[in-house]
Amino acid sequence: MILLGTASANAAIAAPLASIDLGEWMFTLTSDEYAACAQGHQSAAQGVLPSGKRVSMNVEVVGGNFMVQHYVEAVAERDHVRGVSPNTVLWVDDTHFVLARITWDLKAERVDDQTSRLTCTVIAETENQAFAERVAALNADIPVQERAFQQHIHEETPLFARDIERKALAGVWPTVSAETITAAQVVEMLERLYNHNDPGPLRELAAPDLRHYSSAIGDGVDAWAAYAARFEGQQPLVAVHRTVSEGNRIGVHAQYRWNPERAVDGGPGVASAHIFRIEDGRIVEAVELTQAVRPETVSGNDMFSQTAPSVASQDVDSNRAVAERVVTEFLTGNTALRDELLSDYIQHNPVIPSGAEGIAGFIDMLGGNPNDFQWSMAEGDLALTYTRYTSDKMGLPPLVTVDIWRFDAAGKVTEHWDVLEADFTSPAGHAFPG
Image (cartoon, rainbow, N blue to C red; front, top):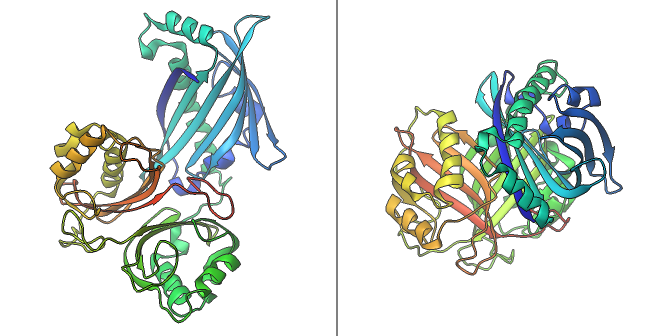
């Protein structure tokens, strides 16, 4: 595929994040609502493929080109939705057209208790070399912000935000909050499930058809209970070291006695990261990553402990944003941001030295570590990010990763833990991000 262009814009939504559901919004948008969101929008229709995936079919004119798009559901979460139109028909005149692939991605993030921020990103690609060259030639002397593609995204994004805001404030989507299930309840659930062979709390907290992105556990409460029963009498849960909760998600950093092959063998066990998504007071999705514990590390720090007291007074919105920048900017190669984002940086990754200079040197050695960043969440002095790192410089497959970042009083990252597992498909067939 040849990149035709990428455009992105932001807009404020005067509604709490918990009241928004982008996954529902994209695939229930009416024709009139879509047409009201940009001068070039003409109509829209919704459908469902035989597989069950939803499709949003949009007709619009961008830069004088008539386009028909078929956005197939790729990601559909409350705060993140992505539709991919693999066969967009782009008419260059009344008789000639080319095919393009258009990706439409929307993310919502919390600004404060009553405000959210919408980010709309659209990526256009084609296999038609001649058309790509024509577009490049037409845009050669036009500043990026003045190109029709970018101007269209800047026009429609605030109008998308206005429609989302209207529906959120009207209560179209039930408000959800992880407060309906607390981190303490989740920790107790894991303790009872694994160390007491008691799936009762799991069945109380989780939806029966729970979706599980794990390399070993299938979908549904029954599959998870059956997996845990394999360890009866072995008390595999060593400890829960930290949790991070925000919105409708709860993250857990834990240590288990089983090895990467899921057997208790007296070895050092694994580090594990769980992420639970709550909807209508039940856990509806879970992510579980595991990584073999290395007793000896490059930094000399073990993979779990915290070396200094937490800082009580924190700007969680700033911490969340900084964690995202560390992943999407610093770790992808912009190590000049080191002193802006990091302080002393106590490292618990077993193969990277401590110190801001240690991680910067590692990233420079890789030439940057590109990634499929998904989202960040923050609570207290901790932030958690969910990502897949895709660098092949070390001969490794992509690594699905939960990073946990601890912040100092200045709002810089002072300590880091992670759990990394080679990219996998779950027993139920779910691929990253789950």
